[in-house]
Image 1 (cartoon, helix red, strand yellow):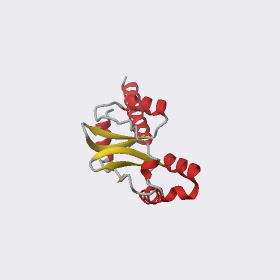
Image 2 (cartoon, rainbow, N blue to C red):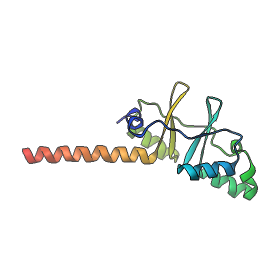
Image 3 (cartoon, helix red, strand yellow):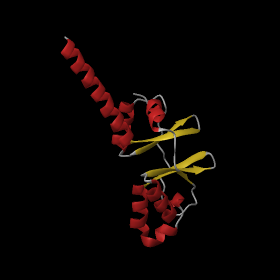
Image 4 (tube, rainbow, N blue to C red):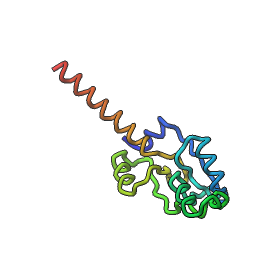
Length: 142
């Protein structure tokens, strides 16, 4: 299965933030939107990604004062991206190796969506279940 197929099912909604939003504001947004990460945009360009882990690190390093600091101080700047034509298996490997849970999907410089490790695992489970059902049907008719 390809990333583009997941986005067709899941949708292309991506919650974004700007680099000058505070850590406290990002915490509120992550909570309100019930997501684990947000893409940080500087204009139309991806400047980074901020996850719950980044927020925890910020507070652990800076205490309560970190909540008033801009997220640009704590966001992950070296973003690993997914492309629409990549397979679920290749992304699962990348994400596991890098210990990350969210990948923005881009084509050229255009942000198309975001996939999480949960999206990929759900897709993989559906694929395996469909394969198992096909084998059961084949055995039953054979």
